[in-house]
Amino acid sequence: MRKTVDFLVIGSGIAGLSFALKVAKHGKVCIVTKSKMDDTATSWAQGGIAAVMYTPDSYEKHIQDTIIAGDGLCNEYIVRLTINESTDRIRDLVRWGVKFDKTKSGRFDLAKEGGHSEYRVLHHKDKTGREIEDTLLVQVKRHPNIEILEDYFTIDLITQHHLGIEVNKKTKDITCFGVYVLNPRTRLVDTILSKITLVATGGAGNVYSNTTSPLISTGDGIAMVYRAKGVVDNMEFMQFHPTSLYHPEEKPAFLISEAVRGFGAVLRTREGKEFMYKYDSRLELAPRDIVTRAIDSEMKISGDDYVCLDCRHLPKNELINHFPTIYAKCLSAGIDISRDMIPVVPAAHYTCGGIRTDEFGRSTIRNLYASGECASTGLHGANRLASNSLLESLVFSHRSSTDAIGKVNAIQIHDNIPDWNAEGTVLNEEMVLITQTLKEVQSIMSNYVGIVRSNLRLQRALDRLEILYRETEELYDRSILTRKICEVRNLINIGYLIIKAAKARHESRGLHYSLDYPRVSERKSAPVNKIPKD
Image (tube, rainbow, N blue to C red; front, side, top):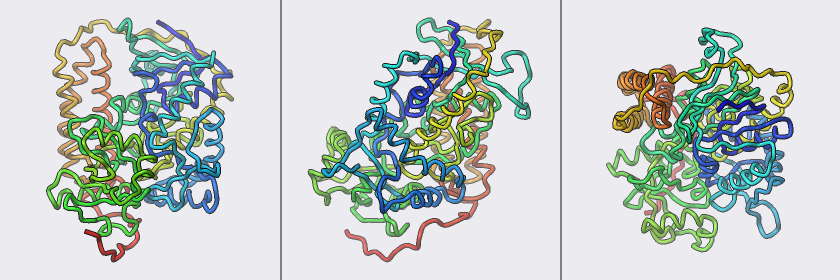
């Protein structure tokens, strides 16, 4: 198959779908997604979306909360434009049909999460992402200008390189002409040419063994842009969510939303002792990196495999009404959260770095945009403020759409792009090589490049990853392509980018915490002398 479109969207989460809806009036749109349309990280988002809606909240308060959480590395210009546009983007969702929870008076029922100074998180019970995903999919499927290709795996971006022109990091005006995709029916590689391409492929949580990210989160878009010589930055800042349900056999790890702590849940050791008072005066509502390191520290002190989240003191009916999905999930595991403490452990959760973009979502490659978790906009800095991710996706997909609409008619399709050359490749019958490599990559990253790092650990990880890289590239070059081998290849790229960035940062900041360097700044206030309740 060889296809030509005006707008190509890779990914079907909130970033991809909202962009598609906004550009569809101006040309033919094709959405490519490697799994089913609703199999996205957006669908898994529990807590909600942060936006300024009512006083006493203000844009300035939200801006400052974001900058504080980002530990001095946020781009203030980007933060301000994102927060200042938050209310309008919420109105977009409401117009599309998203139903956020409201109070009896008709106002949005806003929640408060770690790092937020006010109640500003809009939600739909504890399945906000699912509500947004389902609503946007209804709109997308109705639109006559939008075509959806499910189960198509995007292999690589098409640039001048595929025309026989040398491309390297110093090449100016690298241009994206489309993508090569793996067709699930023919098992052949198809060519999709486009005037405008948006990468909205999500994050890379599966580079770690324990993650809340769906299995599709293998860093594909970031790896593709890196291979195409686009700029990727801030990859050292991988956010670990403090509280995933401790259930080692289950992948992905089930997320216990931060909103539960915002509702009043308390972290305790297995023996029932509170401990957050030792680490931060904001206790359970400190930013995620602080809470995560506190839990990691307590687990190392005790030798336990998990700590506990205690909801037993909270009103049962309100608890179940606010968090029905979490209640049901825990109950299926034999845990009644109104009577039992929830065993929790940190898990890789969000990729704060990624494809470098400007204020309009433009990457360093011409005609290529990026939005959502795969993008590095400058909003998150060294640590993402809770519930800012869905907002970021909406804002930058909107801004990307306005920029793309203004230029799409002036872009010419390059018809001389060659089709994929699979000559000399054979079917790989050694699946054990791929599955074992994946386990090795995840083990290396989890053991050496996790919540706490050191120069020695990083070098050891790099040495081992380089061996896997060489072996996998050899296998890739001689094999008929499959999704599995491409995903493993991408995860090795992601691991390398994280390690490379971590080795280059000679400081401890935000989500990058090294035993070899002191913290650049101390964002937490002095611990209070709170007497813990046993």
